[in-house]
Image 1 (cartoon, rainbow, N blue to C red):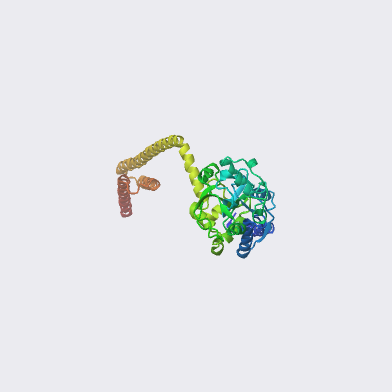
Image 2: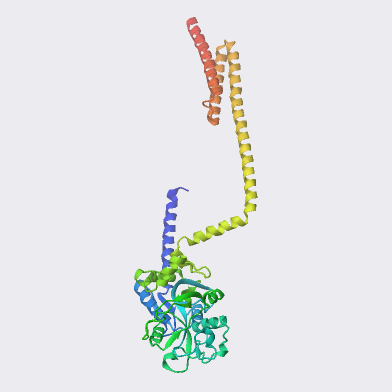
Length: 440
């Protein structure tokens, strides 16, 4: 069938493909929500203020509308995320499992503050036993981190009193002697607490040891004067303290468009200045957390070649694992290749030899033809000899063309002999023709 006959079928095929593509794109867009639901923190907390900042940034730089989901702890946020009631959540890996979760980007760094009243006799974490110390609500990040700290210092929770009373009562009542609070330096309540001058910070001397025991807690230093106070900036000296990162997390199967839209807003220059942890993290890790899974769309944004690199490394690792098998196969392949080249060269030599033999045979035929025509005087017989000589020459030329022997010395000698024989026969025929004309 000619191309001309196929053109109508090609045109119809392209038209149908275009229609199906438009239908698919329309269907995909109609099933993609432009609402992004974010679970951040409980109302009044620092993480809730982070959620509000995210809402403003995302709605300003993308087409998404953001809904803040009523939230509490990291464990609660993980639950609403897995149940589909939220698309993105702020979760601390130190306080919640990260199974089936993918990191988008770290958003905030929180510090574990051990705060007690200024006039109390508590000067170390070991002195907390017997006092009224708020650890936070059950399942809260405050409590999860506080229990890890107390466990390292071998201070049992049952030796403390009023542990479930909210730390917000430190300023409003007389039910607490102190609290263990996990939050940012920018937390308004913490700043208000320290600004009163009625509280002091207890150093975590074993911060590095605690960080070693719990992988998502990090040993840090509380800078001098980070909190303004009526008694002067606090603390008056740098203190060892623990920190943990709050991560923006989504489900592993979350749409790439959602993650890309979120990062479009966060990586904007104006927005990233409000969340310096993002820039620090990208410079330090290149967008990869060694112990946590990063969403594929985020990896592509941070490092477009990460997937290719991962595939290449995995391939090289497999090569190293099977190196001896590969070496044996390579030796076998090279041996087979060498054998094949030997056979090919031998066959080429045989073909060359056969070509020369065919030309030599034709050369013998023309030489024999020369001897036969030398004794021939009959006109009809000479004419037949001439036709036979021309046929031998034609066969030789055909063989030379097929076997690429046009410049071969044997073929040139063959042509010269053929021409010599043909000219001799033609000369004899011309003499015979001239003699018959004279007789007539």
